[in-house]
Image 1: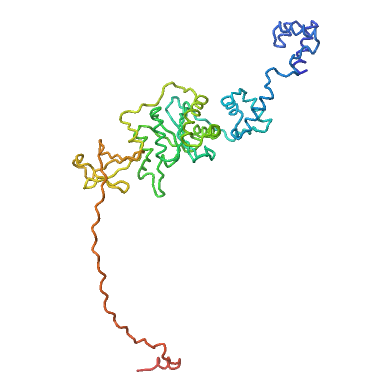
Image 2 (image 1 turned 180 degrees about the vertical axis):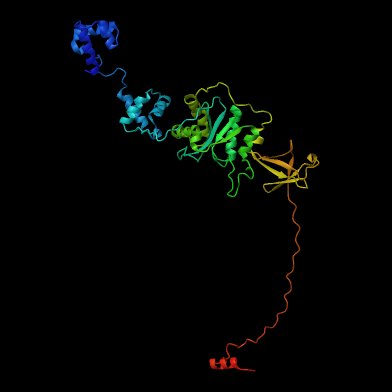
Length: 426
């Protein structure tokens, strides 16, 4: 009998012996008077044991059978589910195997079978959380993670993420390289789906900020923008640099979750290629993330802005250089020579600056002021053959003087003779 049952027994015996009323016993036990009368009747009929629950010591009717427990443990012991935690394992058991078991039950079974151990949770440093932005699209955190996403089943790929600060809504794509072109391609997909956010929040990688030289003085002149920095300015989107990984903690923590959940999801789905990985992202992971982890913003207004006619993404999200038109109306770019069509030649073009856009598809577009020019590939003129200079005729050899011949072979004077010669007077 438990201590609660003993305390209840004392109060009921007082009510039975008329030392207290049933109402007082009900108030003491925090039960209704009707329940107190039932317990008194049970105490009279069965004695002290009548206060114990009738199912104590008996197997619960809701207990899951040993067969299902063994089935679950057998599934989780497979190499596919290696490293799964109780929560994720419970979700995949329901989704893939139609076995509805709570995460706490799975946690107990995995602990008993040695498949999972609880980790210590330590609070090493108190961190003051930055409040979320109020509107969706006010601030979007942007970062890339290098990880063995396919666990050696395919090529090396990178994950580029853009997560909204107000809602935690996630957009992501796998790419082959963490390059300017790949990041621009992911940015274009985001802009076409959601529109232009107010600001992006990134780290200080060379994709976003130009690294100053050692002898550069900040007060002298502003460093040139990177290609992504220029593109964001042309799109009218702000940019904020994070001074530490903790500053953009929302996207960093999402990578920690992805390196657990996403890696295991790709393994279960048997993903081996970049295309399959992006298909899994779009069909499975992103909808599941946005359903479970996205939150409602403080304001229902969407801060994203539509793309206007002036926002030609193929012209903005590309590599842009500037070249000078030569006196023969040609332009040099990447070691190649291009000529401007005669019908497009205008006054004051020679010596003017043009914008050269190297599109991601491989095309090149050249814009002068507000219009694009038609170009044709030109072959450089061959260089004139230089005159071959004949080597100058050598002057006839001059006979060498032979006054030194045999000089070291002739015997020299003795020391006494040399002193005498030196002291001789003329």
